[in-house]
Length: 61
Image (cartoon, rainbow, N blue to C red; front, side, top):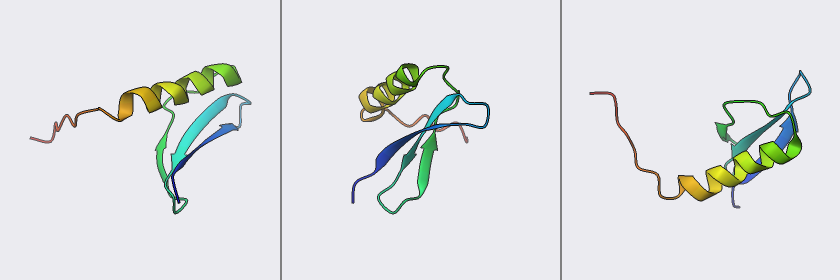
C-alpha cells in the first residue's frame, strides 16, 4: 500500500498535514500550521515537488 498525506485541523483550528507510510506510521509532519486549507494543500504540493530529488545533508559529523 502506498503512503498518503493526511490533511487535518489541529487543536487551534488551523490546518496541518502529515505523511503516513503504507503501514500507517507517521513519517513526516508539517512544521507549521496554515490558516487556510488551500495553503496547507500548497504545502503538501511543495513536499511532493521537492522531496523526490532532495539530498541528505548529514550534519552529524
